Length: 270
Image 1: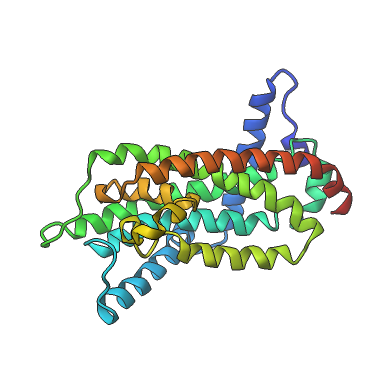
Image 2 (image 1 turned 180 degrees about the horizontal axis):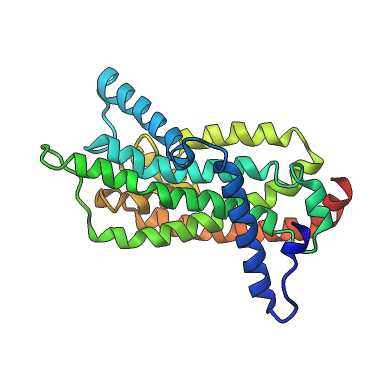
C-alpha cells in the first residue's frame, strides 16, 4: 500500500494528491463492503430505519405539527445528508489512531487521511439519493405527492458547502483527538445535540421567529434548507444559506490552520 500511494514524479502536486485521495477512498469502500452480504444497502439502511422511526413517532403517535407532506420524503431529504455529516465527523475522531503505522510510513499530504473519510461518506450519500426518488414516486397519486422544483439545481451547491464544512471540522477534530482522547466522546455528544438543533425532523420554517437568527448560525441549517428546497421550496432560506456558507469557509480555514500547526506533533504521538 505504501508503494502504491507514491505517485509518479512527473505528475503535478494536485494530480498526486487527487490520485492518492482516490486510491485511499476506493480502498475504504472496498474494505467496507467487499465482505458484506448486503453491501450497498448498509449505506442506506441506517437513515431508512431512522426515517421509519421518526415517521411513525411524528405521524402516528404525536400527529406532528412540523414538516411538510409527504413527511417520509421530507425526512429523507435531511436524514441522508445528515448521515454523511455525522459519519464523516465520527470517523474523523479515529483518522490518525486507526491506521497510525500506514500514516507514518507514507509521504502523502496528511490532510488526505481526513479528506478520504469525507469523500467516501460523500460517495455513499450520492448513491443513496435514489432512495428519495423511490419514495417520491410512491407518493404520486396521493393527495400530497412529492414534486421536484427548479431548486433541485441547488443540490450541488449544498453538496459543495457540506463537503467544505465537514472537511473543516474533520481537520480540527482528527489531530486534537490524538492529544485529548476524551474529545472522541465529546464529539459524539456534540453530534447528538447538533442533530436536534438542526432542521432534520422539523423544517427551517418551523423554528420560532425569535430564534431564527440564532438557528441560522448552525451551518447545517442553511445546507439542509438547500437540499429540502428540491421538493419543498418553502424551506429555502437564503439568509441561512449565506450564514452557512460564511461559517463553512471560516471553519475550513481554521481547520487547515489547526492541522498545519499540530500535524508534526501528531506524527510523534501516534
